Amino acid sequence: MWSEAVQTMPREQLRELQLRRLQTLVGIVHERVPFYRERLDAAGLRPGSVTCLDDLARIPFTSKYDMREVFPFGLFAVGRDEIVEVHMSSGTTGKPVVGAYTRDDVALWGEVMARTLDAGGLGSDDILQVAYGYGLFTGGLGGHYGGTTLGVMTLPMSSGNTLRQLNTMQDFGTTALACTPSYALFIAEYAREHGIDLVAGPLRAGFFGAEPWCEEMRADIEAKLGIKAYDIYGLTELIGPGVAAECGEQDGLHVFEDHFYPEIIDSESGAVLPTGEKGELVLTTLTRQGTPVLRYRTRDITYLIDEPCPCGRTSRRIHRLMGRNDDMLIIRGVNVFPQQVEEVLLRVEGVEPYYRIIVEREGVMDTLEVEVEMAEALFSDEVKVVLALERRIEHELRLALGIQAVVRLVNPKSIERSEGKAKRIVDRRSLPTGARSQG
Amino acid sequence: MILQQVSVFLESQRGRLAPVVKHLGERGVNLRALMLAETDRFGILRFIADDPQAALEAVQELGNTARLSDVVGVEVPDHPGALGELLAVFEDTNVSIEYLYAELAGRGENALLILKLEPVQEALALLESAGF
Image (cartoon, chains in turn brown, red):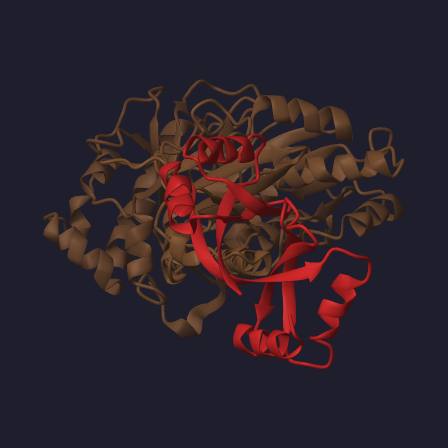
């Protein structure tokens, strides 16, 4: 096992390590990050206030909203000269969230992603094809650093160009694939259509995350690709992928607890829930240097599993994600918030702010449709004028969301008006129970 | 002559046209000429009625987006080649024909064509000087 000593560390020892690291972290952010200092001070906390892990519950939460408010440098805990890499995730509206990495952070990322790949049985004889997007998105480089740290031959394919993915798989004898689960299915379908048999080939493991998927989809991927499909978890706000990952048991994701401390809270009250109770996952980085995060509210719903795992890892596990408690949609690996759609529509003169977002899975690809009411001011007797309007809205949506959306114009007043929270989202994908948006 | 045409937005779903036409009938609107333009996303029903304002209101009662727009009605003799003679008027001019359709019932020796022409004033002047 990769980093066996720390991954199988007795629980008491692990808790001591966590506490020591938490105390150091609180001291550092209090000293160097005004954002955290103000919040700790307001909560009556000083660096010395944390005397046990339960004291973590006294520290205020950090939200995605908070993080984008201080864009781009507000959460840096080191000088900019120490940062060697930056990633970003889409924010709800406007500004994104920045994750900045020191050299040690990049090494840490490689370490936790090496653990992720090792948990799925990879070793130096393996050939890993990374088909997550490379770039500001953390999937590509996260998988990449994991592969190179573990000593796996790593093919930095990035996403797309499926024929080339398949050719490379065959030419090199790729044994492992890292990408979004929907892209894995797309590759499988594409291979079948082109008469390429992947089941009989050397491909044997896949590392899938960045979007919600369910057991049925796992079974489908495993059958069509002839592999074991592992669920992996992470988020840009923390580090990217590498926060938690399944082992060979495929029964919950081991949180790499010596670096990321998990809590489950009641979303309404903010109270920490006992182990085993379902709630919102909150994570604290224990060792990040560039952009450490205290008690980040992930909005992901799961519960902690504390029973010993047959694999020997002593860390607690999180159950596969069971949904979200905000209205964020994850479509083809991209975070989409309804507010982004609303902002685009408000920019187009004459468009009423009534819309409905419809997400479906056609075959293996997620599709995004936005229904917009055809207001009188927009209507024309000429087809080309109405088509141009559709294209303009689609273009603006593409710029704002980063993915293709299809606009469908509907009759005025046909979209439900609501006094309270309007039903803006229809998610028809088959996702884990509760994963549908609550929006 | 300038006619006021009613245009109606139709969602691209089965069964969107019939209720509009049925409602117009119930409101006593007689359709003189009509044309349905369709794309894979939506449709636009265009028609000429005796009382355009009443027809517009009837459609709006149903909740459909609709509007009035100016089109040109031209009577042409009901014989082969007549349309060609009409269109020849616009050859080598700035006028473009956006769309064109015909009245449902004939007018004795003549047929009434409905044209969307741009720019409309120039088109009308050309038609007049050509004797249409």
